[in-house]
Image (cartoon, rainbow, N blue to C red; front, side):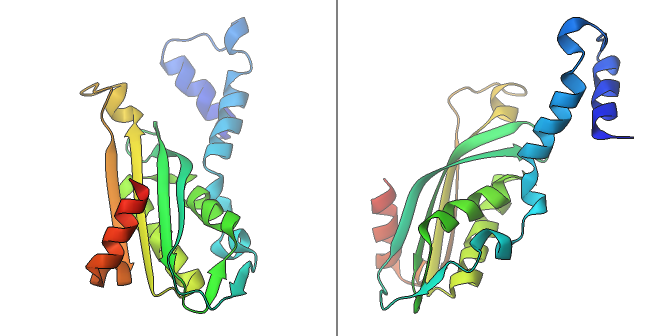
Length: 181
């Protein structure tokens, strides 16, 4: 059974008439949308970074902040939307700027929980750059909490992962946290 057929079945089980004008192409569109929203499964870290690692004497913090992210929670398949702040301490190599955002997207475009997403991004940056430290903070709003369940509209979740110097050095961690405020 194709994804499109599954969407037809879901709509029918909700009591909808999939033959009515407004829904005629919905199963096809929904299947296409879901494939787009989950395209991170088709990507690898090597594909996404594409060799964009460059030698550098810089050992000071590199920070990319306010990276938009869109993901789907693995518990309800509802969106969570937010931003990621990613920093690393280079250890002889720097990563092309757009690649940091692409790494965020690759992991966000999978069924996720925010806690795991934060760790996956941090570990990927560490793996690719061999950085002396990596820090990732994600702030997101979860539709599964806003649209259903407790229906808390102004809630957001913040998760962080600190590796290497960001974990062991309080001054480095504080500098990162003050820069993202």
